[in-house]
Image (cartoon, rainbow, N blue to C red; front, side, top):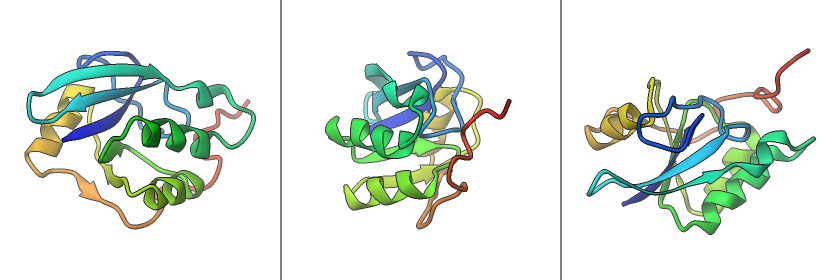
Length: 124
């Protein structure tokens, strides 16, 4: 199965980013071989608005079947759900830990947004 995991870096050893729309990278992995297919820089991370929708479109374009992150805002959730992507949440330190949790069935399939709109923005 091809899934995307939000990350602060571009490898399995990278720290998992708990934000979907504003994560630094999407690490695309094959759950069967537990290998990285590719890492994609999230251009939406610095967007002034609409980051969740732009990020969702990025992973939809990669033909992933599922996404794992810590939190999903309402617009990102709606876009992913409409795109037929399964949406999972997990608390993990690294991308590898998130992948292991997925493979062990220790992730939560969510049916609604888990964060408020604009929750991933850093406040000054």
